[in-house]
Length: 307
Image (cartoon, rainbow, N blue to C red; front, side, top):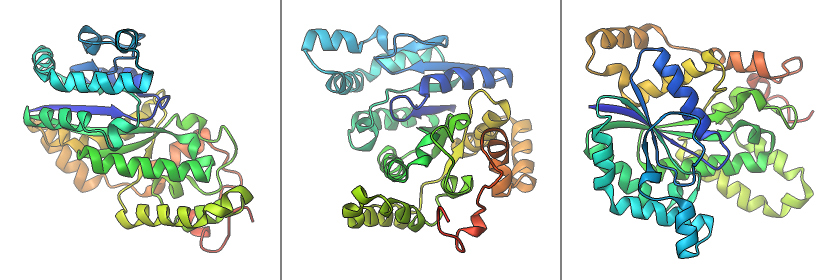
C-alpha cells in the first residue's frame, strides 16, 4: 500500500512550490518522500525529482514538432503519457516504498472534463496507491465575488471528475488580502457558507447585473452538491503546513496505515483532536489579515456586506 498526494490546480496557484515545501516538511517529520513531476512544461524544478516526465516527453518538443500551442501541447502530452503508462509504472517501481507527491500541469481542462488524467489516476489506484487530490487555488480570489464563484465551480467540477478523496486548498494565504480587505470573515470562504451574500455583492456591480440569473444558477449548483470547502495554507508557515497535512492524512488514510504506533496515535487524535472552525483558521487570520474590524460569521445574518 503506497500513499501520496496528487497536486493539481490552475496555473500560478503554487503547485510546484507546494511540492517543494511539502517534501521538505514531510522529510523533516521522518517520511521518505519522492516527488514525481508529471508537468511536461516544468523545466525549472525547485525540488529533487525522483521521476520526471521530461524523460518521456516535453511540451517544448511537442510544440516545435507538431506545431501546437501550449494548451493543445499539454493535452497531447497527457494523452501520450496515458498511452505509455507502462513507462510510468516502471519509474514508480524505483520509488515504491516512498510517500509520493505528484506534481501535475496547471491546465484546468485536464481536471474538469478531459479524460487522460482521470484514467491515469484510476490506474494508480489499481496499482494500490492510496491517493488524495490536493487542489490549489489562489486565496486572493476571495476578494472578488465573481472569481470566487468561478473557483467554487472549478473545484466542484474537479472533484466530480477526478473521483478521489479531495482537499481544496486556498494557497498563498499570506496574500489573501493583497487586493483589499475581505467582505466576510475567513470561515465564510473556507466553509462556503450562505452564498446568497456573494450574489448580493455581484449585483452591486452594474456590469454584472445582467448575469443575475446565471450567477443564481451557478450558486444553486454549488449549494445543491454541498461538497466544496477549503483549507487555508501558507507553504512557508510550518503551523499552516501541519494543519493541511493532518487533513490530507485523514483523507487518504495515511494515519490509519500499517504502522501500529501511527494507528494508535491516529485513533487518539480522531477521538480527542476535534477542532472548532475558528481554531482551524485563527493562525491565518492573526498573521495575515486585518482583524480590527473583521466581520464575524455570526453577524452575516444581521448585516449586509459593506454596511
